[in-house]
Length: 507
Image 1 (cartoon, one colour):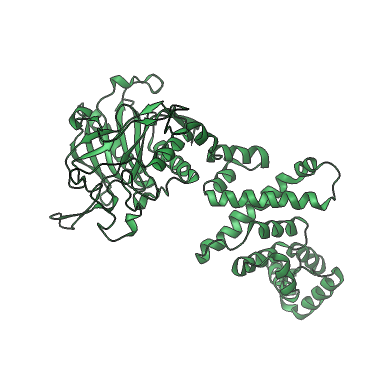
Image 2 (cartoon, helix red, strand yellow; image 1 turned 120 degrees about the horizontal axis):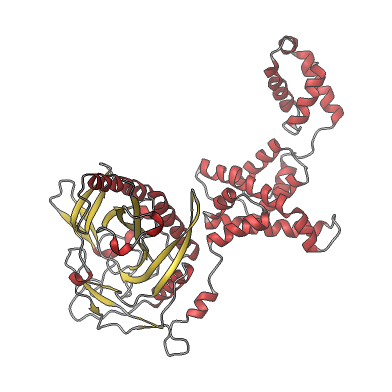
């Protein structure tokens, strides 16, 4: 029996507004002592009235637009009733039938190419408190600092067909949230939390009728991208076995992911919307997105303020700078890195045009050299400079201006690669510009050919035993001679040039 996997995700994104969703409490409660960033409103005391955080609404509109959602003219909040110790009001203010965003889409990269994932909705709600269970399972402590934190929920269509696609979607969504600056989206800290819905079907992959699927299983407690992938892989195996036994799931259920055991465990049967007894929130007015009306959220202005998002930036780097898809992804997967790269390129363009060594307009001059400069900048940034920051754990200590100057020095062949590596390390350690370092450290003067010839003759004369071994076939000894010469020239000679001279003389 050939089965097709059907996966949909529900992703919660915690917004990093200064205050909570419906009160003025500090929204940095995760960094504060337990139960200190609370007030009668977020603790659900009788008679307290909530007030909507406008910033949270505007950021939700921005996020919805970034993932292709339509924004309605009116949106409203609803009460969702359920009774847990982490919900002090015994209901959650959420959104049911009139969310902020509807009908979006997000493109992801898969092993078979690009794939479009539909997004059902984006709605805004308040977060619950945080439970801490004792190791023996007998006691639970509750920290209400997180209670009423602004929380976006993004619900996808069941368009994913593998755990790898689900993981890729979650990663791309996190990147967008970070680019927008609305959330740190750190899964380990709970800023981004994912629930996965999965079911199997014997329908053909290209002819799946969602209405005819067996009841789905929702997997909770997925707090890393690896957990999303592993939990779905396990659940697919579990459900495949049920199908093979002739007993596929016949009721919606919720299962928790146990990271240590590597299994999903049944928690409860899934509630329907009617179980939550939704009704419009009576203490909050509807959200107004109608242009030109009083107190409306300006959707047009928010849309115009959207920055270039990761996928568009990736594609631009491929087309404009001739970067490979892989290299474009590496540099855009971190917004700070992408910004640094962009600023470096801007400085390189200004430098190239200022030289005036090539005829033509500014644009023509840039077009001739930009691909080579961009690749050079990318390689030294990703492979060398970032490696230095990871090695010592320090923040990037080189400015885009200094890095662009460093790249131009290499581009003009003023120093060899070994000197360049040494120069970059000093730049990272001191924060100084490369020209000043080259003067201070006596770098970049190079070595005259006549001097190299003399040094080579001297080293060969001083090492007759190694010369004899080399002539007898031990050609790896060439590295010994190159090393001796690099020391004599203080690293300022070109290793490839030294190799050619030495081989000629040794023969």
